[in-house]
Length: 181
Image (cartoon, rainbow, N blue to C red; front, top):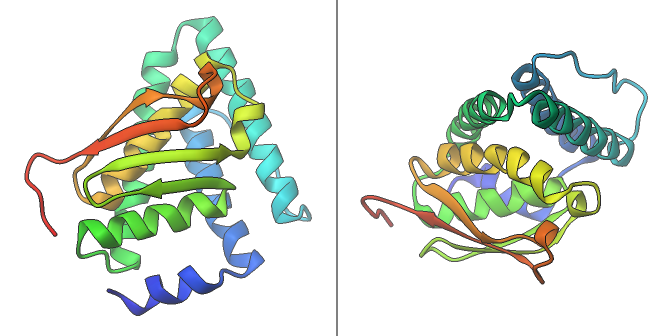
């Protein structure tokens, strides 16, 4: 396991969280084909709320315009590249490391991500679930699929249950064609 992954599991400074959220924000804005708002003087918590509102509004617009398929593809691609970069940055060498990194990344954005090395994912608490409708969540979850595929080096995410659809939690599976340890 890479030392940076171990240290980040202990503590992540606010400026580092804001920087990572800013990168996610930029990639998301690019996928929507729009500019992101200025985050300059906002606290991390204010940035997170801005991100929730921004993604909600832009996903709703894509649904209204019937461009959600194209947007989902672009969200997936951008998040995949972001995940690959995190995989390299944190020295992920195994599925166990990938799941640790995923938990860390989701913790930054106020999502309680739990997983197993067999690919079971449970999200019991999600900051965004109070902002998103099921349709919006369906669009935005392309970010999850891309990010986790990039971090894991190839896993495919599929949801079986979502908080936004009335589930007690989100349940998903990260499947791998060939397993590595």
